[in-house]
Image (cartoon, rainbow, N blue to C red; front, side):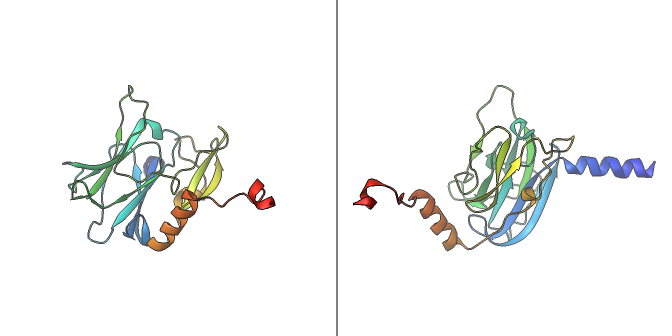
Length: 198
């Protein structure tokens, strides 16, 4: 009896969504917490006194059916500070437009009518998301602007992807993130262009 209880608890906690908390803005600085939301009823309290930002990473084949919502109260109630669905993203904990601190996070089902991913207040650009080259793979962020290609079919029965890339995000300082962003915004010119041959 005890063994089956342990297995059911382990299986339930495998299904989840990853949250990483950081001391700096834009998911930089020291990592101060990692969480795995198990199912759509789980609510976790964020460490808003220490964490300045946090990262949400896709790690389940069913992510399009759920959104991660950030609330202004510690019990997943109150104003919604941010929301993200079916993509990776970083949220600064003090959301500038609402001047509200995110205090808790919960996974909630999304309506079937909506096929447009939700993204409110999260930074979801090329620092955190990169389109895959084909339907069999996906690009998982392991640092700002750095991705690891993983096989989509490689997942557990509950839908959780099986690859250590989902549990890793190497952080850096804010200045380095800005330099990465400027490189992505202004790509290096092709050395074989007509101008370089003249």
